[in-house]
Length: 478
Image 1 (cartoon, rainbow, N blue to C red):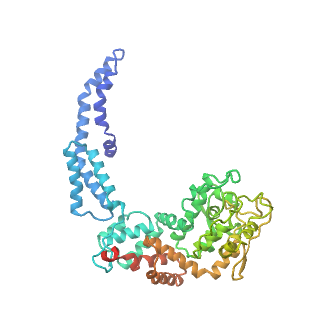
Image 2: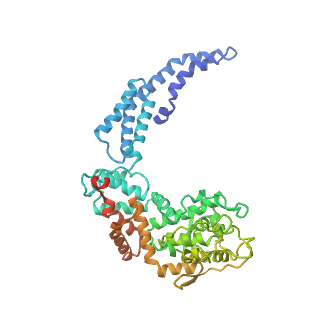
Image 3: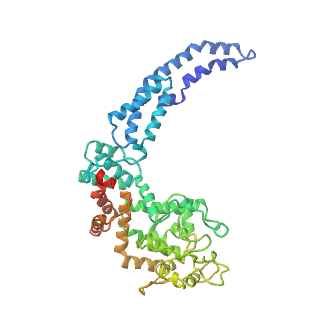
């Protein structure tokens, strides 16, 4: 209740406006009412004085709470000089007859404009050697890796006690944080970004006349499926390979209807099993991926194949040569050719064939998904779809199921290692270098002997010297 009084200042406001209120009471109204409020003047004044006394008495405590907030915002204890500087700013303003509220806001602005808040600062040791980060810096690294936000009270308490880097404590905290709902931030910032659907709810690059159902509600649902899938992968400590072989996904009624999956009603989200028969399961079945890697009016085996080759296999393809002709956008009015036939005709040119032989077969396997990720039996012109794929080495498979089996049987180790590489780079907030290969080796080895459970990859990262050490200042300058 006191908090509300301090915000509204209603005892002071009522006392200030009392004369104005009495002035509105005219001779036509009861004089007794005028007299009543005139008699209440001392009482209103007392309420205002009492409030101001309480307000002034609370000011030092509020300033102390602001200093506590500064320590949380800066993710470390304040140095005495920093605390004195903030207190001095407040007192200087008060001495100039600035109100408590205004002085408080000015100090708060100073806190939020500080580089200690805006930047993730760490103290490099002198010289060229590396040294462990302190517990406060380790708490920040861990919290921003898994939650994309500042450390919570439990991490802060352990950092203050100097216990966070103890192996058992660090392991327990990592496991606790992975199970917490705040790990949704990692699902968004790493998971959806890794598969190139970050912010998909804002993706509008579709022909509205051809795809009127691709509205705000559907886009939000497709994006939420992607987030919940990665969040579940983390919270339930699923195998890394579940990104490919999952037979479940997260649905609400809107998305289930879009996918043609029955018996899902209501807006609430729930895990639904047995979805492979509907073309779903894992990232290969995300409608968000298929929609993002398509044109505005038709599918794009080239975009989809390139997405798979770069995202899952880690192959870097050269940029296309200049003056490459554009493919027709729609599936109608294209001389009776299907999208696949158009692509095959396009890449018959020698300068195009080399790269397209690497990517297009993977894209052809996705042709049963239309430009907004719906499963279909034919294209928009009613023509049959060919989802067979033949790779450069002669390997053949058909559709998403054949592609999934090929990746799991032939590219499993490559995909798992690349996933670890991407996760390590995200955790370290830098590119992975040759010196990090030993950490990647350890990650893949620990996954191999622990049923590929994702937590073991995360634990390997947070226990690594790359995560716990900082380079010396002289080395960093070079």
